Image (cartoon, rainbow, N blue to C red; front, side):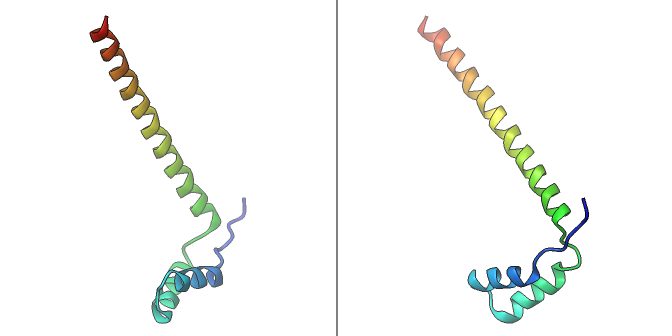
Length: 75
């Protein structure tokens, strides 16, 4: 997949809508523009999704362990 740079104008507008003042929003966009690509964003999203899935799986194991322990106490 070809790397495409992120939409700096959209980023600027979202920063401004979020309450950032104009000079700060311009500075953030200017600093990030050369480094942020769609491929990088997708890779980071995939890593975040994997962390969430791992956490949920561990949580399910914990809940199952508690359920087994409670069932053992009841019987």
